Each structure stands twice: as C-alpha cells, then as structure tokens.
Image (cartoon, rainbow, N blue to C red; front, side):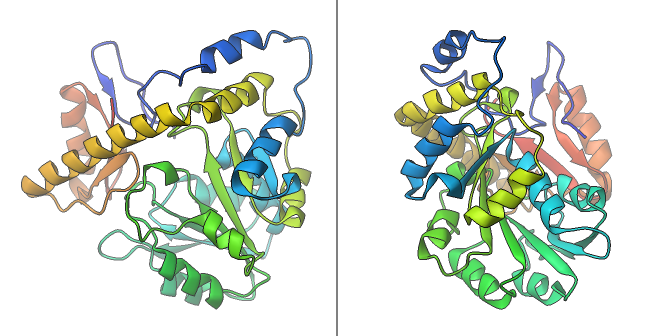
Amino acid sequence: KQGKQAGADAFKLSSNENPFDPLPGVLEAVHAATALNRYPDATAGRLRARLAERFGVTDDAVHVAAGSVSILAQLVLATSGPGDEVVFAWRSFEAYPWLAVVAGATPVQVPLTDDARHDLPAMAAAVTERTRAVIVCSPNNPTGPIVTQREFDEFVAAVPGDVLVILDEAYAEFVTDPDAVDGLRVLSAKEHPNVVVLRTFSKAFGLAGLRIGYAIGHPRILDAARSTSIPLSVTAHAEEAALASLDAEDALLERVQAIAERRDRLAEALRAAGWRIPQAQGNFVWLPAGRETLDLAGAFDAAGLIVRPFAGDGLRISVGE
C-alpha cells in the first residue's frame, strides 16, 4: 500500500518523502529535456558512467532502473522461482514478501530482535539449499536501526557464495552511526561477488516522483537483473534530474543533516515521553504501538498528521515535513 495522501490542512508523514524542493539545477535540467517524442537511453548510460566514476567501478557494474524497488523485483525474478526461497527480516520493507510471491518463490520471514534490529545470525541459519536470495535492509524500513559493518561482514561470510545477498541501502545518506555497514566498502573489498548494493534518488535526493534508483554489483548479476527489466522504464527526465542532483552535493548534505537532526530530536523527545523508540537512522521514527496501532493512527489523523500504520505492529512517522 502507498502511504496515505494528506489533505490541504494536514501534513503527510506517511511515505518517507523528502519535504524539500528539488536540489539546485534539477528543475532547469528537467525543463531542458524537451525531446518527449524520443525514447530515452535504455541504459541510462550517462548516469551509469557518472555513478561508476563516483564509486570507482566499471560502467557495467552499475544498473539504473525506475527506483531501487524495481531492481529488487528484477533480481528476485532473475534468481528465484517455484521451489526457491527468499529470506528477509520482518518487519521490514513491505514489498519484500510480494516480490518473492510474484516470482513464484516462497518468502521466508525472520523476526527482528526485541530492539527492532535484523537478527543476522538467525537469518544466516534460515538459509537452506533452496535459498536463492537474502535481503538485508539497513537502515531498516520501517523500524529504523542499522546493521553494523561487523555484523554484515560476519553474515556474508556465513552465507554460501552462490546465494545472492541484496543490501538495500535506500536511506544510506541519512545514517550518522559510524559503525553502520557501507555497501560500497563491501564491494570495494571484492571478497564477496554475490553482494549487490541498492540505493535510490527517491529519499535524500528528493526525486521520488521521477522514480530512479541504482544498483552496484558484479556485472554478471546486474546483467541478469537487466534481462528481467521492463525496457525504457527510466525516463530522460529522471536521468537528467539525477545527474543534476549529483552536481548539487553540497546542498544535499545540508538538507540531509537538517533532516537527521530533526529525526534525532524527535526520537529523543518521544523517548522522554515514555516511548521505546528504536535506533532511528533513516528519515523516519518508529512507534511500537502494537495492538493500539490503528487507534493511534486515527488520533494522529484527527490532529492533521498523516502517519503510516502497520496494523498490530506500530507506526512509522516520516521526519522533515
């Protein structure tokens, strides 16, 4: 389900969107892309080259698609089918279960720890000979905590090398914990070619409405993802906006810092009010409301605050609006 839209007199805190206007130069770049009668570059070649240079990899080690969730779907389709299993933490990003189901595979949900973190030893133990892919979300959406670099390194070492490990870092830019896993650091070590890192322009870069994200990984794995993709799904406007956003990194860092500071202030205030708030490292906080979740969401709604309820578990509140 998409986060509920807000009326004119309410604030939308339900979709983890960036509340700031597009970064400097982005609107100009989009307005200049006037060749609407032409197909876009199917490979998003200029953006791939720019990202490859940014992260010190070859162009074919970068894959661009209509949001990182599109790449998730492509990777699951490329690796998994009937009789196969896809392992992930739960609760985590709500797309994970149905991505496995659509591919014909079986979703395997591994419960989070009591402090709403990934239980990586339990996830490694859940891997069987039928497992084709494991998804790790850091920071975890919707609960907020990160996976540490040490935890991830130990986890990848414990997972068979023929199992795809997808590190979903959609909120990586908001992370302030120095111990957090860095997917690009994992890839630079070149010890685990079965790891693919996903990132997006939807969150920190504020391009959610244009749908563009990317993956960094082994070219053979990304070729498999490309083989299951819908052709020409990345528009020319999205590519131009992403390129312009990369040119405005100073402004990006200022905005990310502002959102992270608001997040930390909100989390601390909620803890002071008696809530048990997990470590928040994305652009959102998690209220573990349990059975009271839907009633609490109604109270927020009545107050003009549109939040994201997950019935029986808790509420996710986007920060920044």
